[in-house]
Length: 115
Image 1: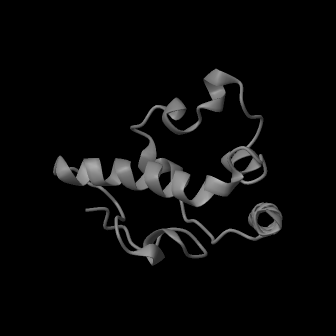
Image 2: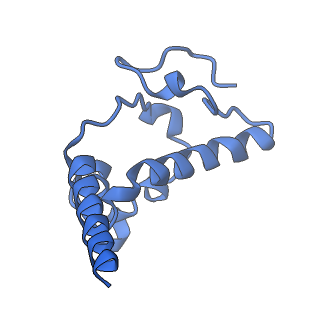
């Protein structure tokens, strides 16, 4: 019984430590061009415009709200990549899909080629 208690306490500590580290760690830089996404409705990404869940940037909630912070990477990757993959499958300009450096770099987009 003691071993179960010890393992449970360790698990709780690790989860709490991980959450703190994620909320405090710097995110990789993301180059995102709003003008390239002007054919999308703003509320596609900015759900807080209609559901009143946020007051600022995506990061203000997705990085610091304990209910969603632990999922920040998978949330953004799944959301963004899914849209890009769907566009590629339709034969439309789709932007970056698989190369991390296409999105994660300082100073904006590296290439004008969005196909």
